[in-house]
Amino acid sequence: MVLTMVILSILQTQQLHNYLIQRQAQVLRNNRAELTYVVNRYESGRISLPMLSNRVTAFEKRFDIYVTLVDPRGTIIRRGQNTSLTEINSLIGKVLNEGVTPTGNGGTEIVTSKDVTFSIPLIEKEQMRGIAIVKAPVKVSSLYAQAFGSVFLSVLIALGIAMVATYFISRYLTKPLKDLTKAAGRIARGDFSNRVQVTTSDEIGQLAVAFNDMMYRLEELEGVRRDFIASVSHELRSPLTSIRGFVQGMLDKVIPEDEKEHYLTLTIKETQRLNRLIDQLLDAARIDSGNFMLDKERVDILQVIRHVLKTMEPSIREKCQHFQVDLPERPIIGLVDPDRLEQIVINLVSNACQYTPEKGKISFSLRVHHDKAEFYVSDTGEGISKEDLPHIWDRFFKADRSRTNKKVGTGLGLSIVKNLVEAHGGHVSVESVVGLGTKFTVTLPL
Image (cartoon, rainbow, N blue to C red; front, side):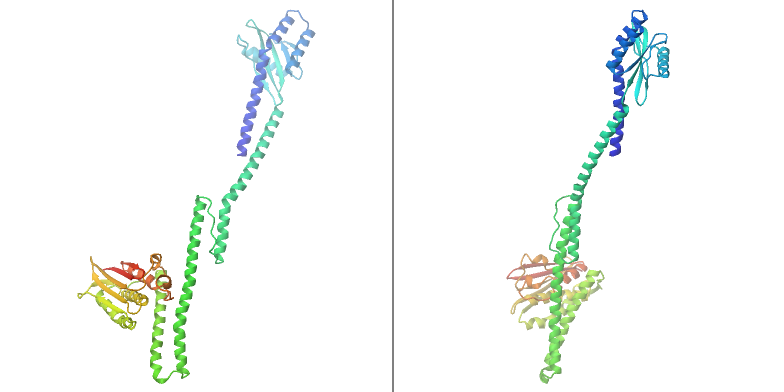
């Protein structure tokens, strides 16, 4: 930008310089009649050389120039100051050689850094009466100095404006980035509470929106992580405490011999509970890492489900819950992983059993519909609110937030069910009404 301004200024200065020269020459040409008159009177003997010189001196002072007069033969009548013979002879020769038009146009000029010397043919009645060699001082250096002074001042002003504009623009552009940097530092320290202020809709503004969304999700994940650690700690501590108490009681002989078998049975149940929790954690880790694989084979889905339900029926009856099963008589052959199918059924039925009160009803039904196996698990429990319903598939979703005031489970069961069903190419859905119960529907391709 600065270089462009300098170049433009030089070009404009040169144009101004040429304009001044041409203007001064034109003014003198317009006033050459006075010089022509003086030369004619001198040539006719009416005035002497001193009188001619006085007239020309007055003319010089009026226009701030130096005038040399030459007769038509090329003889110098009067020589102006600061005008060299070389310049005079050069200009006389060009005029005499090139000639002039009847209107008196013609002549040439010699331009130096300090002045311009040009010839003015003196014409009367279409005849050349003489030649005026005019040296006009042109303060070119002063002109250039003024031009460069103006350029320098303009450059300083432009640079000042540019620096001020750059400062404010850079602050405007970098402030969101600095805010993002500070927010990233807060995230590194575990603080997810503050959000980046979004002031623009450009790429930086979009980045700030995405960053805020990330902070919101990280804050949610951090809350989930804390809840999960607290829940898993509780789930692990409870059976371990029971097992430790039972074993310690036997070692201290606090538990009578005739009750040891009962407490050993309770200990086995607690270890089974620990195994289920650990299996769920391992499944969740495999799903996250992408190492989760299904071992599919052609099996009788009806037989697999019937076996699982028979195994779970005693625990359901133990809670005085009514268990209604509706299974078809004909086999249902499908390509599934039998172990994972058992896990799906166990998780859904256990979930229904867990949240259904005593004397409540749990129903399970299986059918084939459009080359797909569909089974339903419904209960008459407390139901799930509309607000919590979309979140029940989220990992570590707390059971106490959706269906009970008791903190039960780790919130992994339904998340694992959804992943297992979708891994089979199937679909799982849920319907629930608070106070009436919940119904899960699983569809698996055969």
